[in-house]
Picture 1 (cartoon, one colour):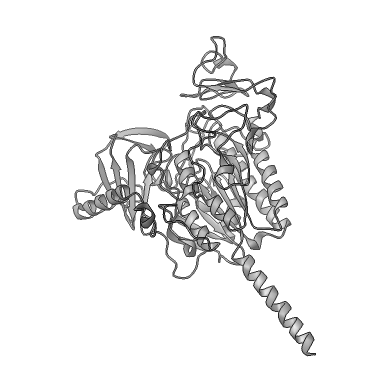
Picture 2 (tube, one colour):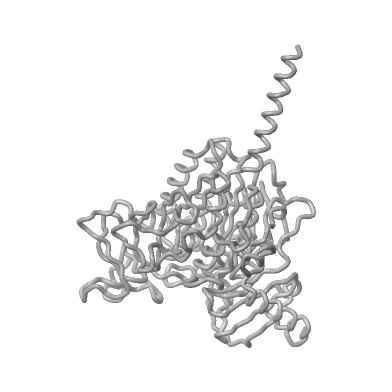
Length: 520
């Protein structure tokens, strides 16, 4: 009897210890939408379309009302999410051109390297847009190193740039997938020959017309930014992107279901050119932009179904976010403006993509971990840049002081723990390091324009340029749409925030504990 009791006790102890270890080492899936606004999904107030799968994530998890990305364009937000460092501190962190070399240098601490060190299998599937290759840029016909595999990912399956930029090929690990050596791929900034078809010379052949800028090489009836030739066997159809991301993600999850894994699901929806699969076309009254939101929602549903089927939902932390706020006409005539109707992509906020108004960086932000996160709503201030420090804390990994310079550990807030606090401040930027910033502290929001006096703000249905002073102050509690500048009336607060923002920029870091490493 004693032996049996001891055996049962030890078995129970082992089960508890194993279960506890699993609970502290959940799988992590970060789903990052592209150009999705605060008001673009139904759980955040959209009424002109339905997003049942994203809504389910919110119903089973925590829906943040002050969830942010750190920049209002894609490349800087992705840089900051992965590195935990504001993009304005880096080099070449603006929207990356087609032939951009790797922006994140090998050896840089990233979310992926942190989790890999903690025993996770790591993958990025979807849009990359952070450059590939060494100083000379990508070797499209050779080895595309460095890339994701040199900064902590075990595997990757990528759209190498963004789909309005050439080339339209998949990259798997270090190679262009299905590339025929007899048909080499060439990518350039200038027209390869006078007869090369473009959106300017062959506009009448396009199945989606361009409105500005996107009028170079034509592929799949859509003209793009930049030029390329060859690689025909490697090229994809725009309509198939979402299906491919889901297919490869399910494959990765199934391969690593018995061990901790980290999946960065980097959707291209709802970025231009918006060309959803045929089965989603016409599903909304909002044109292809709305249809692409429905397609994105389907992707979320397929990932959730996979977790349910493999009985992984209770051991998986899912984070849903966007890389920046919305834009309607972003270079193509796809009906986004004409069919907008009552829909308000940024919800109650002004601005959108390219701006430091709230609509540019305040986006849907949801965390779900069934059995651990209690469903509800949180008003705590959290940002995608904080995932590095927060996931390091979750997996008990130490952050070197010289890395993740602006990532705060807000794990308690992300998990909805009692009395847990989010950030006390956040710096927002538009693109790269061109001197446009905003600082939110509590209910106050300071905007700063160093190199330009024109702001981009989505007013009702279109993008407008308006001249503004270098500094503006808004009270978000009373004026969430940032319509009334109170910088003169609140001169003391304005001066304090100006000083705080300047200090954050000049000090080179804001994360507690990051200082020591920078002063070596």
